[in-house]
Length: 302
Ligand code: NAP
Image (cartoon, rainbow, N blue to C red; front, side):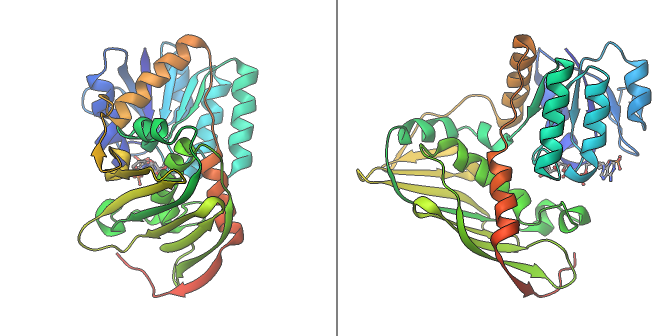
Protein backbone atom coordinates (compact mmCIF):
# COMPACT_ATOMS: atom_id res chain seq x y z
CA UNK A 1 0.00 0.00 0.00
CA UNK A 2 1.13 3.51 -0.75
CA UNK A 3 1.34 5.78 2.28
CA UNK A 4 1.95 9.52 2.66
CA UNK A 5 3.68 10.82 5.79
CA UNK A 6 2.63 14.20 7.14
CA UNK A 7 4.80 16.25 9.53
CA UNK A 8 8.39 15.28 8.78
CA UNK A 9 9.98 15.91 12.16
CA UNK A 10 11.54 13.88 14.95
CA UNK A 11 9.26 10.85 15.14
CA UNK A 12 8.71 10.65 11.36
CA UNK A 13 12.47 10.51 10.76
CA UNK A 14 13.35 8.35 13.80
CA UNK A 15 10.62 5.71 13.42
CA UNK A 16 8.05 6.05 10.61
CA UNK A 17 10.42 6.37 7.64
CA UNK A 18 12.62 3.37 8.61
CA UNK A 19 9.61 1.22 9.59
CA UNK A 20 7.89 1.87 6.24
CA UNK A 21 11.14 1.24 4.36
CA UNK A 22 11.64 -2.09 6.14
CA UNK A 23 8.11 -3.33 5.49
CA UNK A 24 7.05 -5.32 2.45
CA UNK A 25 3.48 -4.01 2.86
CA UNK A 26 4.20 -0.31 2.48
CA UNK A 27 5.69 2.20 0.06
CA UNK A 28 6.37 5.80 1.14
CA UNK A 29 4.85 7.60 -1.86
CA UNK A 30 4.71 11.25 -0.70
CA UNK A 31 5.41 13.57 2.21
CA UNK A 32 3.60 16.70 3.37
CA UNK A 33 5.52 19.07 5.59
CA UNK A 34 6.18 22.80 5.65
CA UNK A 35 9.94 22.26 5.54
CA UNK A 36 10.77 18.58 6.15
CA UNK A 37 11.37 16.17 3.26
CA UNK A 38 12.56 12.58 2.75
CA UNK A 39 15.23 11.94 0.09
CA UNK A 40 13.80 10.52 -3.13
CA UNK A 41 10.14 10.93 -2.08
CA UNK A 42 7.81 13.50 -3.73
CA UNK A 43 7.26 16.27 -1.20
CA UNK A 44 4.40 18.73 -0.70
CA UNK A 45 3.87 21.61 1.67
CA UNK A 46 0.08 21.50 1.33
CA UNK A 47 -2.12 18.52 2.20
CA UNK A 48 -4.91 19.34 -0.27
CA UNK A 49 -2.51 19.48 -3.23
CA UNK A 50 -1.01 16.12 -2.29
CA UNK A 51 -4.47 14.55 -1.96
CA UNK A 52 -5.55 15.86 -5.37
CA UNK A 53 -2.33 14.87 -7.15
CA UNK A 54 -2.04 11.42 -5.52
CA UNK A 55 -5.31 9.56 -5.89
CA UNK A 56 -3.08 6.46 -5.81
CA UNK A 57 -2.17 7.00 -2.12
CA UNK A 58 -4.79 5.29 0.02
CA UNK A 59 -3.28 5.81 3.48
CA UNK A 60 -2.03 8.95 5.23
CA UNK A 61 0.00 8.73 8.45
CA UNK A 62 -0.05 11.93 10.50
CA UNK A 63 3.11 12.57 12.51
CA UNK A 64 2.63 16.22 13.42
CA UNK A 65 1.93 17.40 16.96
CA UNK A 66 -1.64 16.95 18.27
CA UNK A 67 -2.93 20.53 18.03
CA UNK A 68 -2.53 21.05 14.25
CA UNK A 69 -3.42 17.41 13.45
CA UNK A 70 -7.24 17.60 13.29
CA UNK A 71 -7.48 19.71 10.11
CA UNK A 72 -5.09 17.39 8.28
CA UNK A 73 -6.97 14.28 9.44
CA UNK A 74 -10.32 15.76 8.45
CA UNK A 75 -9.01 16.69 4.97
CA UNK A 76 -7.73 13.13 4.47
CA UNK A 77 -10.97 11.49 5.63
CA UNK A 78 -13.04 13.86 3.46
CA UNK A 79 -10.87 12.73 0.54
CA UNK A 80 -11.71 9.09 1.33
CA UNK A 81 -8.25 8.14 2.65
CA UNK A 82 -7.43 5.82 5.53
CA UNK A 83 -5.71 7.67 8.39
CA UNK A 84 -3.16 6.79 11.07
CA UNK A 85 -2.86 9.21 14.00
CA UNK A 86 0.31 9.49 16.09
CA UNK A 87 -0.28 9.50 19.82
CA UNK A 88 -1.95 11.35 21.46
CA UNK A 89 -4.65 11.10 18.77
CA UNK A 90 -5.74 14.74 19.08
CA UNK A 91 -5.73 17.88 21.14
CA UNK A 92 -9.16 17.09 22.61
CA UNK A 93 -11.37 14.06 23.04
CA UNK A 94 -14.24 15.70 21.15
CA UNK A 95 -12.18 16.24 18.03
CA UNK A 96 -11.17 12.58 17.93
CA UNK A 97 -14.82 11.56 18.35
CA UNK A 98 -15.56 13.85 15.38
CA UNK A 99 -12.85 12.13 13.31
CA UNK A 100 -14.25 8.74 14.29
CA UNK A 101 -17.68 9.78 13.02
CA UNK A 102 -16.18 11.11 9.78
CA UNK A 103 -14.30 7.85 9.18
CA UNK A 104 -17.45 5.83 9.84
CA UNK A 105 -19.40 8.01 7.43
CA UNK A 106 -16.70 7.76 4.75
CA UNK A 107 -16.21 4.02 5.24
CA UNK A 108 -12.47 4.52 5.79
CA UNK A 109 -10.09 3.21 8.46
CA UNK A 110 -9.05 5.44 11.36
CA UNK A 111 -6.26 4.10 13.57
CA UNK A 112 -5.42 5.99 16.75
CA UNK A 113 -2.00 4.48 17.36
CA UNK A 114 -0.42 3.87 20.75
CA UNK A 115 3.15 2.87 19.99
CA UNK A 116 3.95 1.86 23.58
CA UNK A 117 1.18 -0.75 23.49
CA UNK A 118 3.25 -2.44 20.79
CA UNK A 119 6.35 -2.54 23.01
CA UNK A 120 7.74 -6.06 23.00
CA UNK A 121 6.81 -7.08 26.56
CA UNK A 122 3.31 -5.64 26.80
CA UNK A 123 1.43 -8.69 25.48
CA UNK A 124 3.31 -10.91 27.97
CA UNK A 125 2.39 -8.60 30.85
CA UNK A 126 -1.25 -8.58 29.78
CA UNK A 127 -1.29 -12.37 29.62
CA UNK A 128 0.37 -12.66 33.05
CA UNK A 129 -2.21 -10.32 34.62
CA UNK A 130 -5.27 -11.78 32.89
CA UNK A 131 -7.89 -12.96 35.37
CA UNK A 132 -5.96 -11.66 38.38
CA UNK A 133 -6.97 -9.06 40.92
CA UNK A 134 -4.42 -6.26 41.14
CA UNK A 135 -3.57 -5.29 44.71
CA UNK A 136 -1.25 -2.42 43.77
CA UNK A 137 0.70 -1.04 40.85
CA UNK A 138 3.20 1.75 40.38
CA UNK A 139 4.45 3.55 37.29
CA UNK A 140 7.77 5.42 37.11
CA UNK A 141 8.04 7.38 33.85
CA UNK A 142 11.01 9.66 34.32
CA UNK A 143 13.02 11.11 31.43
CA UNK A 144 14.91 14.23 30.45
CA UNK A 145 12.80 16.45 28.17
CA UNK A 146 15.95 18.27 27.01
CA UNK A 147 17.35 14.98 25.71
CA UNK A 148 14.18 13.57 24.10
CA UNK A 149 12.30 16.67 22.91
CA UNK A 150 15.00 19.32 22.39
CA UNK A 151 13.48 22.76 21.69
CA UNK A 152 10.01 21.33 20.93
CA UNK A 153 8.18 24.24 22.51
CA UNK A 154 4.77 22.85 21.47
CA UNK A 155 4.95 20.33 24.35
CA UNK A 156 4.66 23.25 26.77
CA UNK A 157 1.85 25.01 24.88
CA UNK A 158 -1.87 24.26 25.51
CA UNK A 159 -2.62 20.86 23.97
CA UNK A 160 1.04 19.82 24.19
CA UNK A 161 0.33 17.96 27.46
CA UNK A 162 3.80 18.50 28.96
CA UNK A 163 5.01 15.47 30.91
CA UNK A 164 1.74 13.76 29.97
CA UNK A 165 3.09 13.53 26.38
CA UNK A 166 5.41 10.69 27.48
CA UNK A 167 3.10 9.91 30.41
CA UNK A 168 0.29 8.95 28.03
CA UNK A 169 2.57 6.19 26.75
CA UNK A 170 2.61 4.68 30.24
CA UNK A 171 -1.15 5.13 30.48
CA UNK A 172 -1.60 3.42 27.12
CA UNK A 173 0.19 0.38 28.54
CA UNK A 174 -1.70 0.55 31.84
CA UNK A 175 -5.07 0.61 30.08
CA UNK A 176 -3.98 -2.30 27.88
CA UNK A 177 -2.72 -4.69 30.58
CA UNK A 178 -5.01 -4.05 33.56
CA UNK A 179 -7.77 -6.67 33.78
CA UNK A 180 -10.18 -4.08 35.28
CA UNK A 181 -10.17 -0.36 34.39
CA UNK A 182 -9.19 2.24 37.00
CA UNK A 183 -9.80 5.98 37.22
CA UNK A 184 -7.98 8.96 38.68
CA UNK A 185 -8.70 9.78 42.33
CA UNK A 186 -6.26 12.64 42.97
CA UNK A 187 -2.96 14.09 41.92
CA UNK A 188 -0.59 16.98 42.02
CA UNK A 189 1.33 18.40 39.10
CA UNK A 190 4.09 20.98 38.84
CA UNK A 191 3.80 23.61 36.09
CA UNK A 192 6.82 25.86 35.31
CA UNK A 193 5.92 29.51 35.90
CA UNK A 194 6.68 30.41 32.25
CA UNK A 195 4.87 27.43 30.68
CA UNK A 196 1.33 26.10 30.22
CA UNK A 197 1.75 22.37 30.84
CA UNK A 198 3.12 20.21 33.68
CA UNK A 199 6.73 19.12 33.95
CA UNK A 200 6.07 16.51 36.65
CA UNK A 201 3.11 14.83 38.33
CA UNK A 202 2.24 12.41 41.13
CA UNK A 203 -1.00 10.54 40.46
CA UNK A 204 -3.27 8.24 42.47
CA UNK A 205 -5.81 6.05 40.72
CA UNK A 206 -8.37 3.62 42.07
CA UNK A 207 -7.27 0.01 42.44
CA UNK A 208 -4.04 0.89 44.28
CA UNK A 209 -2.43 2.32 41.12
CA UNK A 210 0.01 5.21 41.49
CA UNK A 211 2.26 7.00 39.01
CA UNK A 212 5.29 9.30 39.25
CA UNK A 213 5.98 11.28 36.08
CA UNK A 214 9.07 13.48 35.79
CA UNK A 215 10.49 15.33 32.80
CA UNK A 216 13.66 16.62 34.48
CA UNK A 217 15.30 13.27 35.21
CA UNK A 218 19.07 13.28 34.88
CA UNK A 219 21.14 10.12 34.60
CA UNK A 220 19.31 6.82 34.21
CA UNK A 221 16.03 7.24 32.34
CA UNK A 222 13.13 5.24 33.81
CA UNK A 223 10.13 3.92 31.88
CA UNK A 224 8.89 1.11 34.10
CA UNK A 225 5.90 -0.21 36.00
CA UNK A 226 5.24 -2.93 38.54
CA UNK A 227 2.01 -4.79 39.29
CA UNK A 228 1.38 -6.95 42.37
CA UNK A 229 -1.64 -9.24 42.27
CA UNK A 230 -3.54 -10.52 45.31
CA UNK A 231 -2.16 -14.03 44.66
CA UNK A 232 1.38 -12.63 45.07
CA UNK A 233 2.29 -12.58 41.37
CA UNK A 234 4.61 -9.67 40.54
CA UNK A 235 4.68 -8.45 36.92
CA UNK A 236 7.27 -5.86 35.95
CA UNK A 237 7.71 -3.95 32.70
CA UNK A 238 10.99 -2.20 31.95
CA UNK A 239 12.40 -0.16 29.06
CA UNK A 240 9.06 1.39 28.12
CA UNK A 241 7.34 -2.00 28.07
CA UNK A 242 9.96 -3.76 25.97
CA UNK A 243 11.03 -6.14 28.76
CA UNK A 244 8.59 -8.14 30.89
CA UNK A 245 9.58 -9.96 34.08
CA UNK A 246 7.12 -12.17 35.98
CA UNK A 247 8.09 -13.26 39.49
CA UNK A 248 11.72 -12.47 38.65
CA UNK A 249 11.77 -14.41 35.36
CA UNK A 250 12.20 -12.69 31.98
CA UNK A 251 9.31 -13.54 29.64
CA UNK A 252 9.45 -14.27 25.89
CA UNK A 253 8.81 -11.03 24.02
CA UNK A 254 7.32 -10.00 20.67
CA UNK A 255 9.50 -10.02 17.56
CA UNK A 256 8.30 -6.81 15.86
CA UNK A 257 9.35 -3.44 17.24
CA UNK A 258 6.77 -0.79 18.15
CA UNK A 259 6.47 1.09 14.85
CA UNK A 260 6.77 -1.93 12.52
CA UNK A 261 3.97 -3.48 14.62
CA UNK A 262 1.84 -0.33 14.22
CA UNK A 263 2.20 -0.43 10.43
CA UNK A 264 1.43 -4.17 10.38
CA UNK A 265 -1.72 -3.47 12.42
CA UNK A 266 -2.72 -0.65 10.04
CA UNK A 267 -2.32 -2.96 7.03
CA UNK A 268 -4.57 -5.48 8.80
CA UNK A 269 -7.20 -2.87 9.71
CA UNK A 270 -7.36 -1.55 6.13
CA UNK A 271 -7.59 -5.10 4.74
CA UNK A 272 -10.49 -5.87 7.10
CA UNK A 273 -12.22 -2.49 6.66
CA UNK A 274 -12.01 -1.76 10.39
CA UNK A 275 -11.02 1.18 12.62
CA UNK A 276 -9.24 1.15 15.99
CA UNK A 277 -9.81 4.23 18.15
CA UNK A 278 -9.32 3.57 21.86
CA UNK A 279 -9.33 6.82 23.79
CA UNK A 280 -8.86 5.32 27.28
CA UNK A 281 -5.31 6.72 27.75
CA UNK A 282 -6.45 10.19 26.68
CA UNK A 283 -9.46 10.08 29.00
CA UNK A 284 -6.97 9.68 31.87
CA UNK A 285 -4.92 12.64 30.65
CA UNK A 286 -8.06 14.73 30.37
CA UNK A 287 -9.03 13.73 33.93
CA UNK A 288 -5.53 14.58 35.16
CA UNK A 289 -5.81 18.06 33.63
CA UNK A 290 -9.26 18.48 35.26
CA UNK A 291 -8.62 17.06 38.72
CA UNK A 292 -4.98 17.58 39.66
CA UNK A 293 -3.84 20.19 42.13
CA UNK A 294 -1.40 22.56 40.39
CA UNK A 295 1.84 23.79 41.94
CA UNK A 296 4.22 26.35 40.46
CA UNK A 297 7.62 25.01 39.46
CA UNK A 298 10.75 27.00 38.51
CA UNK A 299 10.68 28.53 35.02
CA UNK A 300 11.79 26.06 32.31
CA UNK A 301 14.19 26.97 29.51
CA UNK A 302 16.03 24.72 27.10
P1 NAP B 1 8.09 17.57 16.01
O1 NAP B 1 9.36 17.01 15.45
O2 NAP B 1 8.19 18.80 16.84
O3 NAP B 1 7.02 17.86 14.88
C1 NAP B 1 6.83 17.04 13.76
C2 NAP B 1 6.65 17.90 12.53
O4 NAP B 1 5.31 18.41 12.50
C3 NAP B 1 7.52 19.13 12.50
O5 NAP B 1 8.80 18.83 12.05
C4 NAP B 1 6.76 20.07 11.60
O6 NAP B 1 7.20 19.84 10.26
C5 NAP B 1 5.31 19.63 11.75
N1 NAP B 1 4.60 20.64 12.54
C6 NAP B 1 4.90 21.10 13.76
N2 NAP B 1 4.03 22.05 14.15
C7 NAP B 1 3.17 22.20 13.14
C8 NAP B 1 2.04 23.03 12.92
N3 NAP B 1 1.63 23.90 13.85
N4 NAP B 1 1.37 22.90 11.76
C9 NAP B 1 1.76 22.04 10.81
N5 NAP B 1 2.85 21.22 10.95
C10 NAP B 1 3.52 21.31 12.10
O7 NAP B 1 7.33 16.49 16.87
P2 NAP B 1 7.61 14.94 17.06
O8 NAP B 1 8.52 14.74 18.21
O9 NAP B 1 7.95 14.29 15.78
O10 NAP B 1 6.17 14.49 17.58
C11 NAP B 1 5.05 14.43 16.73
C12 NAP B 1 4.01 13.52 17.36
O11 NAP B 1 4.61 12.24 17.55
C13 NAP B 1 3.53 13.99 18.73
O12 NAP B 1 2.17 13.76 18.89
C14 NAP B 1 4.35 13.15 19.69
O13 NAP B 1 3.66 12.93 20.93
C15 NAP B 1 4.48 11.86 18.91
N6 NAP B 1 5.65 11.07 19.28
C16 NAP B 1 6.88 11.67 19.46
C17 NAP B 1 7.96 10.91 19.89
C18 NAP B 1 9.33 11.51 20.10
O14 NAP B 1 10.21 10.84 20.66
N7 NAP B 1 9.60 12.75 19.68
C19 NAP B 1 7.80 9.55 20.12
C20 NAP B 1 6.58 8.96 19.87
C21 NAP B 1 5.52 9.73 19.46
P3 NAP B 1 7.31 21.08 9.24
O15 NAP B 1 7.91 22.22 9.99
O16 NAP B 1 8.19 20.55 8.13
O17 NAP B 1 5.89 21.35 8.82
